[in-house]
Image (cartoon, rainbow, N blue to C red; front, side, top):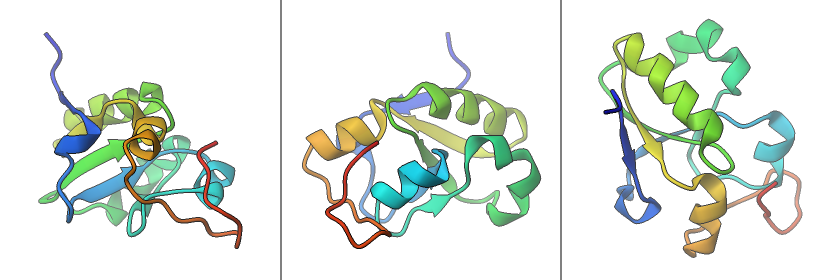
Length: 108
């Protein structure tokens, strides 16, 4: 049994606090509007950016990095949920994404 929860994209609430742990180039190409971006390798040094009272929905490209990030966040006392299938599934599900580069948003 895992010590964290995984939810499908369809179960992520509209106003959820989404934490994207992908690399900068992935974020720039396409991300969930309003999401918080902290690359996974910067997460330990960036905890002050997270509200421990928020339920964090953690996302990466396909779900591998977000699983590790969620496990670590839960061990630090945060409420974190893994988004199954990551940005690939988010995009495939028709949920909107935006880019920071002026181009049509894509998932890298």
